[in-house]
Length: 489
Ligand SMILES: [Zn+2]
Image 1 (tube, helix red, strand yellow):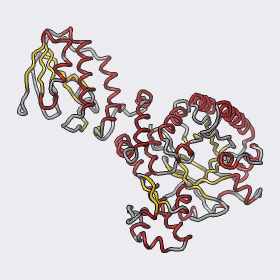
Image 2 (cartoon, protein in one colour; image 1 turned 45 degrees about the vertical axis):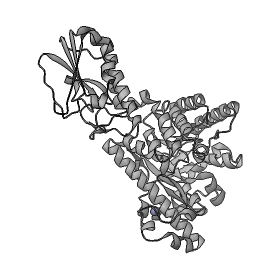
Image 3 (cartoon, helix red, strand yellow; image 1 turned 180 degrees about the vertical axis):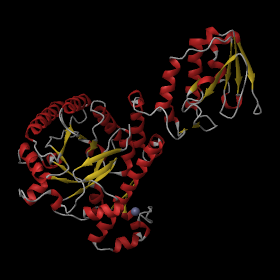
Image 4 (cartoon, helix red, strand yellow; image 1 turned 30 degrees about the vertical axis):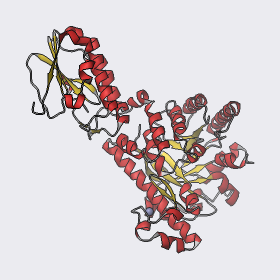
């Protein structure tokens, strides 16, 4: 579901997935212009409510002047301020009109964030009010240069999130944002973020870019992209820096616990922990903020390349080993396999790499399993079962050859060129789950089709498989002949 997108705005094009650094209009530490030069930043995000408080309503003052930036700018409405500080004292329609006035490229209506401690009743209320405001905003809008983002609420109540996404998806919005993950992310409750995002994604129009609020830490980015999120904001780069926190793609470290700078960015390559600590507070914050942005944008570029290569799955699988909570989230993500499979390309330019037992739940494996259920074997009396890796060839005229190809399962010889049945790499040492999954596939095949053969010959590679395949042949036990194969066959 991860994708590379191109968005055209009134201030130029941008590629997704992308990170939007959050700019505080009243206290700009790193200038957006400089960010574009140093990090390749395309889109930045700022808060419309705070901008209004600080600069007032001046019809001649556009957001691009305020931030001194001529690239694409998104504004958030102030909804997050509600979550942090309680209500804000501006009517929602005024926030819409104000954004039309300052003319960002993408604007957001004033939603009511559900948060994660909401009762069901309150959560339903936030969804209802946010939808009403979204409808009202459609009526008010008139600035053709501004695209609009409709936020999805519902918090931990996934049925409310689904409803919110379905209804918001019917309205005239170009973007959607998924609310409430910030608190979950802070507490490492990534599995719940997966449920939240998947509830929204399964009900939103898939052609609209999705912004995952507050998810700007490089740790979680690849999984979020794999779920189909396109835009991420980061206030964390500066908030963490002020707190002495140093981001890495595997987690967060504190300057005080660092002996070395484990990073190749220009900041880390040209200084040391001691030198950073000796800097004045302002300069220290700047250095850490720059490092944090370098790491995050680097991760975005790696994710883009992984998508282009058709390797996002492997990439996420590696990344999710950085923290047990991430691994748990990845396992939760796999439970949505049937849905994910619908969006996974049937062929890719790179081979399938087995990277751990989660690989057996990959779309390519699920897809092959579904296809084999629809398969009809040719009319041949003898079935030869061969636990073959690609390099081993067997040619027996007049017999039907069935290959055992972990983790996909059984592969009839005539289908073995179908991607990725020959285009994959699997360790020769089978792990228990991969072996079990594959043997189950053989058993299922023989239960369905075993009756049509007069004779079944299993070439057993005992070293690798032990008795597993022989046992899986029990549906054809009375006509089975087992031949032990040597390495040389
Ligand atoms: Zn660095």
